[in-house]
Figure 1: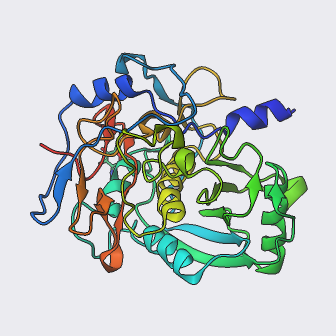
Figure 2: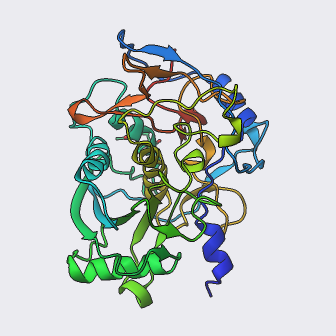
Length: 352
Ligand SMILES: *[C@@H]1O[C@H](CO)[C@@H](O)[C@H](O)[C@H]1NC(C)=O
């Protein structure tokens, strides 16, 4: 029943936001809390657009956003168990950076405000038909490294599932039907079908014929060498804009590819949790091309974003750009998420 076309369209990542739409939606709604940190300066840079054009579906009016619940499950069991699959060669420092972000989601984490766990609070406002909220706790429950590129240096949307199957057998990961998800991360030398051209990441669910059972998963690639101006935006901007235009922002942890991945991972985890089997929260009439809670806020990182502006974010003394804090003093720049409460994009660094 599942046609390749269905598979392709349903998992598209939608990395490009519709700027005037985002602007309209954020400026007309009361913003969220904000704890001001007096150290960093506040900036709202205007940057050149990404290279690929965005979906214009919702441009111009937030009234057109019909985010609806389609009766399926959300990830409400606590904690959400993430099984990490590192595909290809990863530096220990890169792994640590990504794990620090994931481990910053749970509220128990000590982090300065605005924090990653406050950011996830918006995600936790989504419920299923029993009224159960998405869990606020996220745990790394297992890890597997495929250093040998066992399925080659190029992956397709289907061979990604073979990578998961290999990891499930070798790790081994438990069959965690209740609250498990797989997160497969490809190193910068791995090419993936549609990576850089149409998507920076996607989420879907595994098939029993390939993996043995049905579990939600997400893939995100390190774009550092292949297309940072697409998937690590705004830390890299299109080359043709180089002369005279505004420059790219300095990434918070000095690794453009991985710092860019962090926001995409946030995007995919938020969507996967609210739409794990692609039958829960999404906008649009076509379930094969859902617009999900991250898609609606793509490219927006703070108050006053849209129309080429990314929104008000912070810049520290070293010039690094960020909009939230995590554990161990980490800083991250992560896109906002559509709030069901505010009917607008929301984030922990919103200004009053
Ligand atoms: C659960 O979601 C509802 C609806 O968005 C929200 O009003 C409520 O505060 C949430 N509860 C928790 C415990 O987060």
